[in-house]
Image (tube, rainbow, N blue to C red; front, side, top):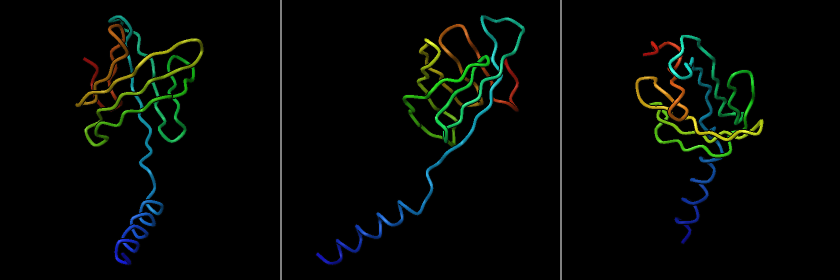
Length: 108
């Protein structure tokens, strides 16, 4: 029983000592295939998403695999609700009308 308590206490101490993964992601996006690019910024530490000059709260974050950049964020604010989803190779989208590419990748 003492070993179990010691292991539980050690695991808890380690969990509290290791900081949570927080990151920022920057994208450039096209709406409906236009040539105009818009910036999109996700801050997982502040739990915000900024899109077309408006800031949204991230109310749900599904971290599938941060190393593969596959994530899904549910954004709420300014009377709007939408999901921003990323895929491997820097691609991302909002619904069927907005295609994005992470900075450093070429938008197709």
